[in-house]
Length: 638
Image (tube, rainbow, N blue to C red; front, side, top):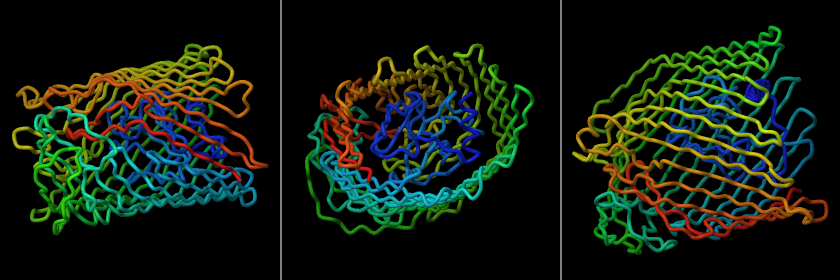
């Protein structure tokens, strides 16, 4: 199966040829293998992303990888060093050892080819913010390569807020001998003057009314500033039948100046009470890594792979101590600047997590017949939370976790599979509108069952479909006292499907769909404190994209990206919902050369119909959906 081959390539230090492509050749639709989730450069398609896979967060589930190696993320990798990010679920996750529930998010960093290329991209950004990105891909002989990257961003948002970012990083790769690759990287960004648009919490949880977009109604002084970084090393090697993959990473997110704004108790006229929370030195830092050793045993048509893995993370978070500014009654969407009050932050909460996991795995590939993946993990999880003025609280868990997956190949075109996984994941902290804001929540034991099929049609079409059942403890606001706590168990049962192919010369298409039946059960539902449907979930989401190279017009292509989502549950009582909506994006590319320099002109109109809407978070807060915007970019590969 292709998944096995990919897994071996990752362990052995191989890399996809597409990773060395110049920026002018990047095209998410043409590179996507399925409709589940893919980003290349600054463009993304698919039904899933790191924040939501099958209705849950893959990042919180600890499912992030850097080029196939486990990585605990405190902040996303800098976009200037990331070439692509792929969401892998079901069959596409085969070949990734020891998965956890809720998919895998794998990040591929940029890679130099055989020639030095300096790519420069000037982007208008959304709402006419200006971006400049430079990437220098430099091969040094046959065995060493460098990527040096930088980006400047002046971003503007639908809320009227804005902020500046400076992103920078580099990647060095060395192949000292055949079959061995060593990688070191650094990627970070600094940000400042990042204005905070208020989140809206209505009195009864119902959807707010329409407001004017692009009109900032927060406070100019309530902004954020800070810096982030990720750095680390990777080593991949193949010594005969032995393969080694190892990585050590440091990830840090620091907000030196911190503000968050929200409206509480907003009524039908849009009037509510305005608040700003202020703090300083809100930081999360994680040191993590993995060492994985495997042995390949060939037995005629059968290939056995035995592996042992050690994963670890050490996370230190410092948050809270926020000072509250009550700015009085105000109307959402209407600017109402107030003088900055004197706000003195208090002591911060100390939140430390240490987790070590030891695992054994077995994989069998029987040519043209089946593939079997088994894994057993013992994890030791310790979390210490020290809230100012209270004794430290220790949480300790040592569960056995496991995964099992079987794929059958009854024909050359058809693959059937079934899998089950157990996991342990973080549940975050209580939101700012809770009566226990910033409270640390315990780790969650999770489980997933899934089954599906993939069929390769003649002509290059490929279809994948699966059903799944995921269960986790459910946390939300308790209406009795405003505490954010466990209120029951949430299950996501659903089905997903993907179709990709090229029906005509020059035309590439990819589409994904997920149908979801999310349900909460427990005493809180039985008592009527919350409804049976969790906040923020929708029963149907569809994402479809197409890219067409126009015959007779060299270098010209047009593309379309459409999404549809059904009604989305908007409050805990299940008495409010965001209406169904469809969004259409249209774009075009023109590839040419100026002299000997490849160039790309990219134009896009996003949310063509200018659909107005709100987004809702798990805590019931509302933020604006972006409206129509036009972006343009010019890229050159020198």
